[in-house]
Length: 192
Image (cartoon, rainbow, N blue to C red; front, side, top):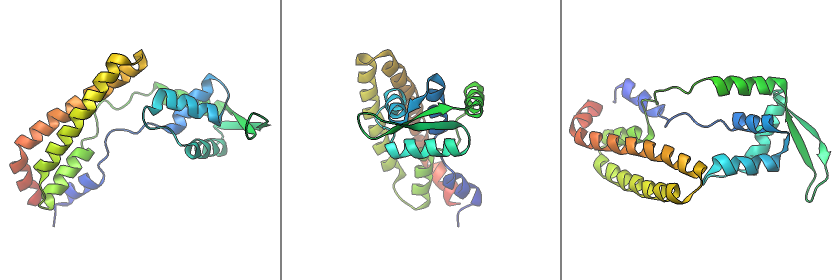
């Protein structure tokens, strides 16, 4: 049986705060009323970077925001394709967005990450955690190469996003090296 402390740390592990799609859509709507199609286009252009927002998620999110009184959907408008509704942010939605925008993000990342969880679980299960770390290191280095290319050839937005990603990957690589150096001690602790 594993110590409850380690088990709960592993189960609740998450890698950093997730980006809030509803709050991001509220921010885009604060700029100007928009159709769902336009919101998806703008979201993907500025925040999607390799992971576009599915149309279904846009409309279900807008539906929840409307239900909660954060946005109002206008009447259906004819267009080139199916009729579309223009969404407008409400005062309640603008207040929620402003509150979120002005609150700082927690300066400390979560202490449990996906990397940590995989290493601990591998050790708990008697698997080769070092092999996992080696594979992860190679994946990180490959992604760093891609981001470095993007930084050199992309727009300013691309370069800033690439730098952000590179800094996080560098920190992960440092952690991978430290963990590899302490693997035996960690294995003893998690198997105790």
